[in-house]
Length: 174
Image: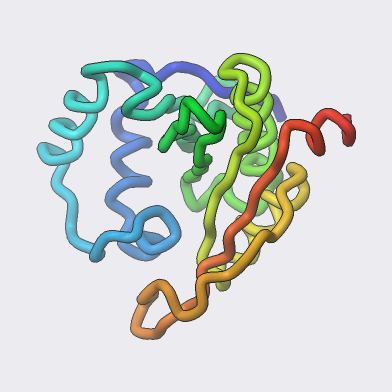
């Protein structure tokens, strides 16, 4: 299996729409209220995201496995003074649980530290998303805290786990 991060192409729209529109895992990907997403709304969002400064709006990559799009990875919320950003990875259901997320987040972190001169990368996950938390830990992230009962997820409150990785820890472990 070959996993890499690459720029989005016109052929990736259907895969990215499937991920964005998946209501079952909505809360794992966004803090907003779950709602149906039409293809037209999604296409308009993609158009808007292509405008402006890439660092200001976030750096978005397609997660590619053996030549096929299986997800997206993004660095966003850049703080240019403190040199940190937040990371996120979203995968198709059939790509989960196979190490693709770990590889993608590892490559995303490497890009952030090496190419964007970040000092720190952080992320958050709902506590029940144990697969994502495990993938992030394998990539070097450590749990830095919890926001107790912070997210409303499928009818119940859940903790949000805050995780981070410092460049100094990343390079020491390499």
